[in-house]
Each structure stands twice: as structure tokens, then as C-alpha cells.
Length: 173
Image 1 (cartoon, one colour):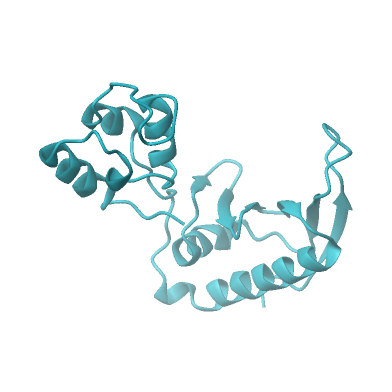
Image 2: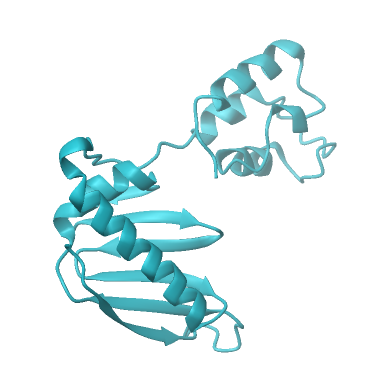
């Protein structure tokens, strides 16, 4: 077992103490930097950093950062939810460490579609028929997986097919 435990801090964000959600920082009992490329491969992190070693995940609407000595989680309901996520991560960390000989480590995050490529395929009329104020806003939402080719009524068939093909190469949560 690589990670035996942690101590956690629960707090409200300083920028807006009236938020109903809380954040959590868990200080790890052990240094887990070596497992992060394996954990990234197993869980599909959205970003990976080599120095200092950190991997970012999006999980059920939460942003989670796992570093060598701490885990940070945002937008939690309460400490019980933090405990559930931390215990899940502890299990995932330990399983990735135990199975590291069978896992190809990943030193990159998931790739996202490029906004400029999406915008290039849109009609750029800012017609608002999709319910958004501009094609740029549409493209920004498409980057995150919130919009697809089927949501733009102004696309011609060729551009619709090209946009579908382009977006099909990416995984969205």
C-alpha cells in the first residue's frame, strides 16, 4: 500500500464566504508523486504537470487536483462528500500503484478540441438560432462538450459532417 491516510481541511472559499459549497485540502501521509502518471492513465486526467508532479481530474462536477503530498477538491456539499471522494482516490492510488507493472504511464492530459478549429467550421453569422449570442460562445461551449454540430441550425451538410468528425475524436465527460 502506497497511501495509508491523510488529514483533511474543509473550508469555504475566501473569495466568497457566502458560497454554500466547501473546498477540501487533504494532506497525504506519504509522498505519491511516483504513482501520478499511472493514476492519470487509469482515470484519464484532464491536465498533467511534471514539475511539481500533479494531475487534474473532473469528477461529478468537481475539480480534483492530486499532487505528490496533497489532494484538493472544490465545490463539495460537506465533509462527508469529501471523505467519500478521498477514500475513492486513496483506493485508486493504491490500486494504480499495485498494478503499475501492467499500466502504461501517461504524462499528458486529455486533449481538447481547439476553439479555432470549431469556429472555422461554423457559419460565423452570430444568428442566435442556437440560443447563444455568438458563434464564438458556441465554439467555446463545444470545446467543453456542451454543444455539438446538431446544435447549430445554420450549418450546411458538409460543415456539419466535418464538425461531427472533428469532435468525434475527443472524449467529453
